[in-house]
Image: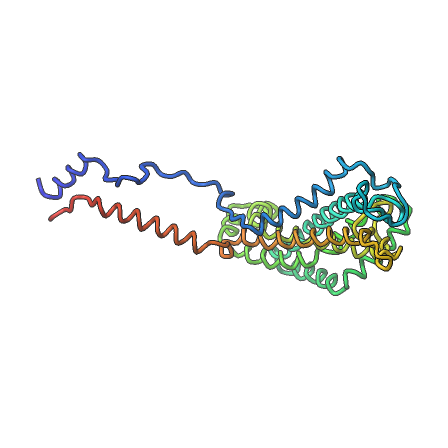
Length: 342
């Protein structure tokens, strides 16, 4: 028997040479969601948004006063019964604040979703199909972008307020107006992303397999744009809430409903600032700032979650992985197999 054969026979008899301390079975792959990096900024933003959402949707269930219940007179100071005093109509400021935050969030959710759906649909179709379809859709998008959105919002809001349809004059009507006006920037950005995805190899494979264009858009293009669509939706949500506040402060807010902008409008109309009634205008201003800051902070943290290059602690994790590989190599070196001598 040659040296090579004897070495092979010895190795077979002794079994596989696995150093002590190393796992004998392959590790199970971690779920994809566990590889996401939820950093401190993510938890801070979620905490801020969660607090405002709890104040808006859960707070009214436990607060003894309603938003349309008159409990005092003009600008009563904060007391043990009314923590933030009363506003210009004698309603409890905290009760009105909770109702206003709820309506503003609902408007933001509806308007942001409408804007993202329109923008993603136009951007994906223009970026993937290209040609005259892209020129037509992007030309229309550029026309809409050239008109200041606040002008369109004011004109449409005035038209809706003059109609006798309560549905269009309320929260839903204002959300529709804001959503229809706010989609162009999302469409332009998605179009650029879709153009890049359309040149990838898996799109060519899908075409050769006989897949139709709608199927390719849904199954092969949209999944690659999902992370960007989520971040765009967060930005559209924050923008819609700010636009609603702007319109409401101009007196064009939802009819028959409270909102943060409408609360500020009445505070300015009844000279809360001049009289020093800070409890009438400061709380809605703080809540509006918290919503905007929380959503913008959430968007920046989502960028780190979806983009591995921006994840915090990446170098530290790579160093730990390199140290583990070096330790495994050292243990393997200490248990070398029998060297074959020819």
